[in-house]
Image 1 (cartoon, rainbow, N blue to C red):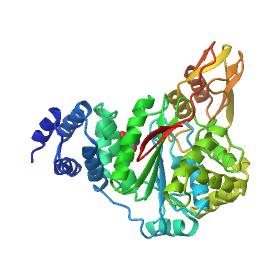
Image 2: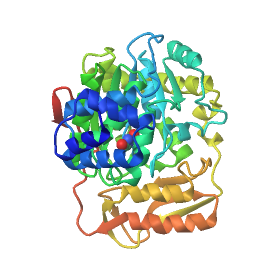
Image 3: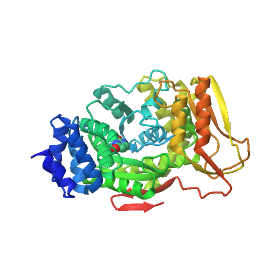
Image 4: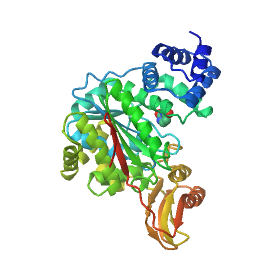
Length: 437
Ligand code: URA
């Protein structure tokens, strides 16, 4: 087999066999195929596409390029959740404890922030002493004992994806559905869970800006997962505005704790319950998502989810006192309200700009500081007067606070007409296809 012929075949719109795709992924990972040939191949895929079988072959070749986590030492059906990345998305912090409280094992491998979105590990490190560097045995033991543990992504998880993603990033080949879905699913499949629930974000703060694109991405990933024996669901959720109101590491943790106490924002609670209910159904602990939702709400009402969160933080070395008294989290030295400069309705929020504002403040993973970020007070459809506070920004550095408040204001559009506010959940993709909410 020659790489030249395979590039040419894809350039001419022909499909590649499993063996040909395995040859490409193995050859590139081992350094036998050079960057320039792989770049040409990726561009041919962007222009001519791959069908479902080719995408599954690429996913599995990338998953098998490194360690395949064997979770068989953990009892029960293991459920995992993955978000394609959103601003203010702290659902994992709420879902893990709720689902684990119902006895469903959650053995999660999480990442750090990507681009303008924060990662679950960065957020959890807001707890003094918290670590995700557990041995494999400790990870298994914790899940068996308390049904919840989170480790960082190991260096050898889908190394082919790491190498290909870096190349895609510099060759304008990120935005292809087959390449995105094989990249995400190769890591999820290698991470070993039996049930995978995907949160596919759609809108200005997401990878996929349109609902049509998000549905196509979700359908492809659900086909891949189910095609290789992992029960897979995808919830399509809105990212035309941040989820909840906190953006930035420890502010997001505090909002997640408020939600576990039953005092969180309604959109955040609903998104968390929706995603979690499919994990519970997939793990066969409930027959329908409606039944699962009631059970999950019960874990908030009786305090078991909050207690589970504290138990999990403590088991991973964190100081869990802050779970019960969030005033123990460190606070930023400076704060500033950003106010509306005209009267009207919030018609548009450039959510990726909100993410960038958080990065300027230092609220992402740019620094280890976790006390900075923002609380958003006004969201899509809200009426504002001149001087109404839109958000409060928190920082330790006055110049960053100034730069961030200017950037924040640019993220908001205020108009005269009250806009249609999108539902924060658009629909769900199961093996039977897309169903709108
Ligand atoms: N996230 C990934 O892991 N891969 C992509 O290609 C896009 C988003």
